[in-house]
Length: 344
Image 1 (cartoon, rainbow, N blue to C red):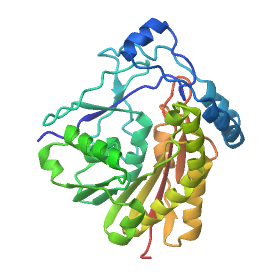
Image 2 (image 1 turned 45 degrees about the vertical axis):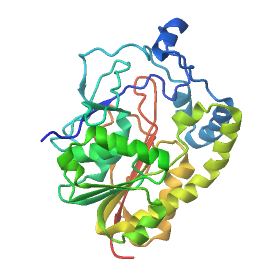
Image 3 (image 1 turned 60 degrees about the horizontal axis):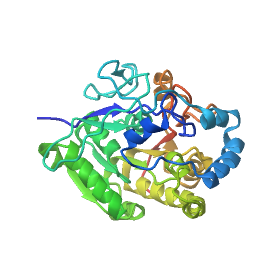
């Protein structure tokens, strides 16, 4: 039986994409883009980031803000890859495979073809840390609460064979993207274990109370990388207005996830933003308002991958924040782990 495709970590060139790719003239970039317009930094978003992240991250923000590495658009050679994660990690299933290399570049994406499985999935290597923190075991009932586009769902299935795997995505467009990912990467025998739904994640806890052993909440967030390249100032202003409301949504999703957990079950909360309001503040509110959850130490995971990732210092043992920087431009990725100790 053929298993899920191998994650292939795609090396990011600049930490938040703020610098022009070195070593290529505009003609080369135009050919690479095949007629597509080059991304332009949105000044409104950048100004907001400068103010917020200078206050929250201090000197670490300057490393994130200005880092750049050469060869962003260069073609990826077939050799030079190595496993992205060391064998000494607290949780690393034998079947789990992810390959990367230190030299920056682009690996060719495979097009979706109905009825045909893809051979690999391209993703930011930091996106696999929430999956490794979740520690899924064979036979467990697992919920991926905000599953689109599906890369973490694919990785979960490479780690273990759940008793039941529920992939949920509320947004219509993203839900179709999720279904396409599952069709592209998951063979038929495993697809039978998967349920795909379009439920409001805030309601799943009430609909399926204490049903799951593990829950991943890869929450909607102010995605720093994509938001920075907002198409126009009006879109940027709208996104910054929405940003103020995201922490409330994230807390509601997290509370629903706790309701959906069985006593003894654990959840991982993750975002791809540096924002403290959407990261540590949400987790701290959950811990202070819900007596039946406790933090779970993931410092062993952070230590095990410290050669590959750069982490913000001063974090609690139950959380980590990957900082993009020159030469190690993964992230941003926030990860926190909680455990449900008794029924609500």
